[in-house]
Amino acid sequence: MPRGYSPHAVKEILSALPPIFKLFIMFLIVNAFLIASTVSPQLVVFRNTAIVKSINVGVYWDVNCSSPVEGIDWGIIEPSENKTVLVYLRNEGNSEFAFLIWAANWSSPEAESCINLNSDYPGQLVVVGDIASVALILSVAPEILDITSFSFDVVIEVSG
Image (cartoon, rainbow, N blue to C red):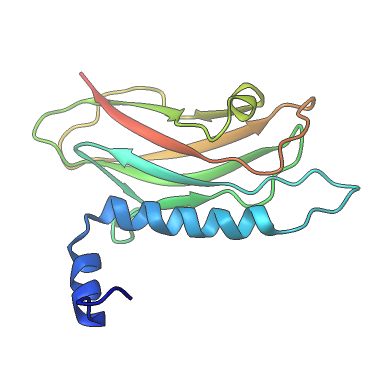
């Protein structure tokens, strides 16, 4: 540690970081371990984590909205496979609106062209305080090649 920086000072600096930076640092560490892992020559394996960004929208793992989603680990996914993760979106704004959901900030252009994020959210208006159950669906094209890991952000935007 450089002269003049005590462990206490470093801890204070880290605790002052916004949660999104802490999540980003955790994301970088996890991906470094994932990239370093070995893959069987008989299988194509994908590991993925995602950061969820939203404004006036609470994103939760449970219908009671007590466990916020800070990231999604899709685990291993193979060509032609779809994986679904269920989340709950709560309107935490001050007027009714609909949500727009998409993937952004892909780690590689190749991944973006072979992997797709969709949802079952029909786009109806959600009044203040109401909760919408949304299935996020990650689909991998059968012809995907040479991609062993990828990452992206799930973006949830308010519309209306």
